[in-house]
Length: 287
Image (cartoon, rainbow, N blue to C red):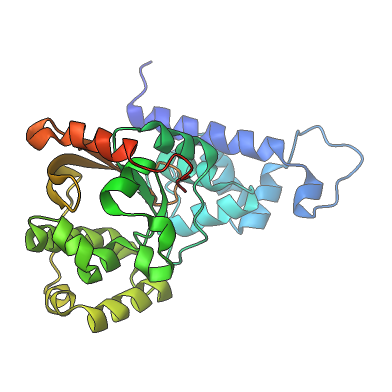
């Protein structure tokens, strides 16, 4: 008998719940275990009790029956089964639900593999930004094009802050107004999930005080989802340069992005970038 994709998804959801239940011991959840337990891990009724749902209903869920758990119930199951962030995303995906969006920004950290990839992009200026578009890590090529982020502190290391308040950045971007408007619209689109977050609100309030353009454009509420494009730069040393840029999401739930600029043959951008890198002091270490 053929099974529909929906049937297959429900069976996979049930199997995943069962596997997470069986890996837990009663002591993990504060349940006193009897001397005889033929069931590996927790019993279904124990998970149901911790999550605050009916045992029969939870049993049907594990059996792959056509029951549709709410977001609230899925969140309760995540807590009951001690799921980590990746497991929580997987559970919500299997259940066909959108995971509740986080409203607060946690400490951002760029791990080793991402740092290694960043540094491997020798001829491509690149940096990693967090949810608020703060620059968290960068490579040497980014330094020679955009300046040393290591010399900046606090909000000055934020992309929106730099675009709208840094005179050098404004001079660097040939089509500043067009790019600034697009950057602001993309920032608004990506930051919608953090509406009300104190760090976002503080940054927006600072920008309203610091930039007349931001103060004029932010209330217009333009949004855009642009992942790539061309940027024409006016470098203070190398002169005109052209880059193709791409924004890549880091698929770990952190809302970090890797921004990569690829120099084009136009305006000898590749040759100019090589010369800028050769002139960089050998002892300099990027973040």
